[in-house]
Amino acid sequence: MKGMATYDLMESIRNTNEWLGASARAMASYPVWGLVPHPMFKVMSAWGRITERSFARMVIKPDWGIRTIVGPDGRDHIVEVETLVTRAFGDLIHFRVQGRAPMKRRVLLVAPMSGHYSTLLRSTVKSLLPDCEVYVTDWKNARDIPVSEGKFDIEDYTLYLVDFIRVLGPDLNIVAVCQPVPLTLAATAYLAGEDPAAQPKTLTLIGGPIDPDAAPTEVTDFGRRVTMGQLEHMVIQRVGFKYGGAGRLVYPGLMQLASFISMNMDRHTTAFGEQILRAAKGEASERDAHNRFYDEYLSVMDMTAEFYLSTVERVFKNREIARNDFTVAGKKVDFGKITDVAVKIVEGEKDDISAPGQCLAALDLLTGLADEKKAQHLEPDAGHYGIFAGKSWRDNIRPLVLDFIDTNSATRKASVRAV
Image (cartoon, rainbow, N blue to C red; front, side, top):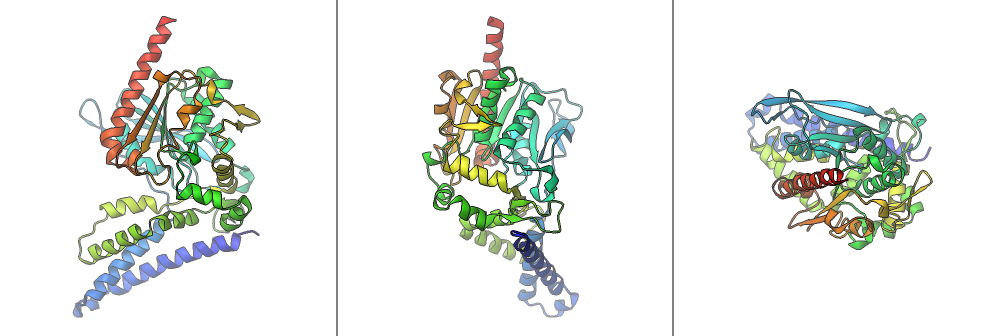
């Protein structure tokens, strides 16, 4: 069977490295070595702890870890994650703040399906919770989904978004981050044609590839260099026997992680080298900056083969979104039909994943939308991660997004009263 042996080989390599780390940690931690106070043992123990932790994280879904927030009354309120809609490939979840009245701002965060779990947006969720009712698309790991559940490609993803938006109702503000930006725009356009009353109030698109050719990056260059046949041969594998989705064709998360790391190999090598030295000196801690970042970064999930391949072919190679030639379930999606949804574009000046210009191309597609309902922001010196989860998001972008939501909510209410 295609790729099943190589999938299990990758898992075996990961498991072996985790075991080597655990063995080194245990070996170097024997009390008897206290009689030989050589720094080699401390370095060996530190290397083992960090190696074991790093390779163990790769198969564990992180917890949201949002326990409480401070409410308008100044008290801590418990946060409960509740599932509103359960589907085979992803759920719609709500962060319910106990003891707090529902907030006027209702925000749906559309999380990426690009190799990491939705918890990648943890800090984004946490920053919005004090001021908003927050809902998130919680995508599932394809390796755990039985083959009997069928396929899941970008059209299915778009229809999932359409269903989630309908469930939440039109009094909704959507924030899409990275990969789902073009499909979120497509879902909105689909509703504009099929069910206009269900459209959200505002749409904030952050660092996504609406038109990959608008500003080429290493990611887009790779997509152009390889054919679809080569790509399928190189990266698509079948889930091995260990998981519930055994036999499903996927783009493995471990392979995606290798790609992520190779793009910034020097930076990651330096980060791990420095962490080993800190741990050897006793200066590292369980939740220090290194562990907080890499516990999330190293936790990866598989994508279905059809989702990954259709994304590359239709969004990057054929540029169906950029050319306004995208179809969903046999129906052409026309972005020009979006006339009453305010749209804001956010990009990072130093984004090396979705460079400035790729997301901004969305505004040119919205030919039916008035200029006063279009907005854009380019964050200086911000990279890809910073525009939705870093200091740039907290200090600059988040206030702008909330102001954008409030301004356009007021505008829509005024127009309704005028009618």
